[in-house]
Amino acid sequence: MIKISKQNIYFFILLLCSISLLIHSYKALLLNNFEAFLIFTLLAYFSEIMSVKLANDAEVTVGFAIFIGSILVLGYKLSIWVAFISALLCEVKHKIRNHGFFKKVSNIALYTIMVGSSGFVYEKLGGTPGYINLYKNPLAFLALVLTYFSINIGLLAIGLTILYKKPIGYILKTTFSDTLLTYIALAPLGILLAVIYINIGALGLVLFLIPLLIARHSFKLYMNMKKIYLETIQALASAIEAKDPHTRGHSERVARLAVAIAEELKMDNDMISILHYAALLHDIGKIGIPEQILNKPCKLSDEEFAKIKTHPELGANIVKKVDFLLQASSFIRYHHERLDGSGYPYGLKGEEIPLGAQVIAVADVFDALTTDRPYRKALTVREALEELEKGSGVEFRPDVIKALKKALEREKMRDYAID
Image 1 (cartoon, one colour):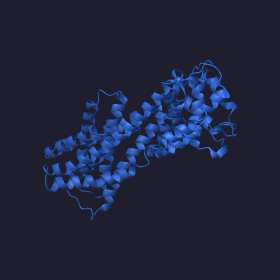
Image 2 (image 1 turned 135 degrees about the horizontal axis):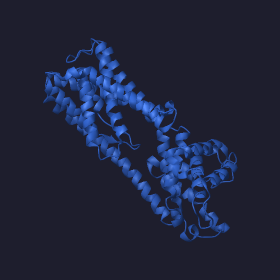
Image 3 (image 1 turned 60 degrees about the vertical axis):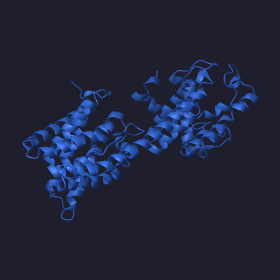
Image 4 (image 1 turned 30 degrees about the horizontal axis):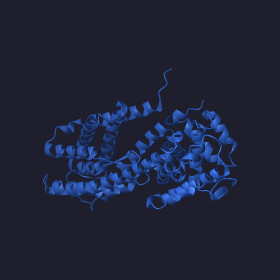
């Protein structure tokens, strides 16, 4: 018996729905207004290829505004083809990216379904292509926006749930929590686009596009600045590890583990970002520790270990001077604290230790146990987990260790495959 995966079922449903819409609307291509069709197709295409990358690999575009305008001017049937052709051209343009066939086809199908469905609802509720009167039928405009939003978020959330095997509620919370505001902001732009085209014509769109491009440029500069922040942090982490060849790559591995644990604990996106920064810089205080202590191949003396124990405080004091790392500094300060009060530098207990610090602590210890050090050989993943279990509820929060185990079972962490 052939077993069909959820991914394949999802893909074929998208494909079937999009093909049905294209067949349903193909007669609209026998159009009189070729100029408008060409303009909206090109606008949609350029809006997608000029997307702005976000920190989490998502993208922001103004495509929704373009499609709103297209539906209001051309009607939903012709707009289906605007969406299909622009998405197809965009995927061809992006062929150099590592997008598989299924992902490319799914993206094209998704745009076709979103535009077709929302435009259909708009016209069924009384919306008339080429005529705009917000006062006469506001319900149709509202339904257009909400339908597009619901289908977009719904289908993407289902796809991500299947792909990452996480609850759909968690996907919606962490990935799409602020998306509705973006759609609400872009909807008036789509209406304005349609009004300008209907009343002024193609040349009027130039006046519309100039402020839109300026806004995109400003947002791109902001995102580039955030990228530079992260690259600076990674450079600092590398500089720290250069002092100790035995821990090279340690901070990046701890950061990746910490983020995976945080995702299993269903932390929100902002907290995960802060945790990522903190994990990358958790050992930055070692920059103030003499190399002969860091690289000592045998047991440290009490005096030397006392010096080592100052690095969380040193690191937190360095990091807290940067505004957007202020919260991260507390995770760095307390990542060597333990539930039973046996940690350092303050001997905090239980709930006194921030959850973020506990996540870094578990990720830090796990990576240390599974890598070679001058004084011992690396443990296997299973052995390392057993060691952590011994400290569960005593040194480490049980839910954090449980989250680590779940993260290790996922494909994205398979370099730590449980033997």
